[in-house]
Image (cartoon, rainbow, N blue to C red):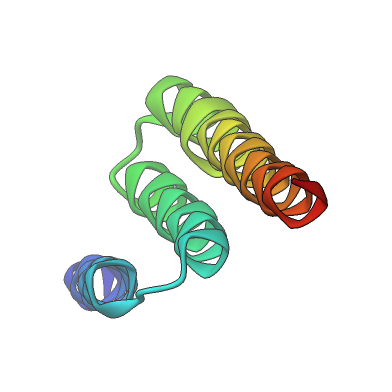
Length: 89
């Protein structure tokens, strides 16, 4: 039973990682990356490593996607601001 659970969580991790690679939009990539972090946290929990799972949950599922979303927002805002400046010249 435990082996089946490990195989299922590994399949979930593979599916989430594949989705992260195939996604083109940076904002969606950040969200899929959060799901990948969550899947990895579940895998670490199944493998009886709760301390690593908690670290993965905090960093991989929350902090890293948040930083990526903030960076995408900043880059998109800068692009809009540059377009407005060019339109007023």
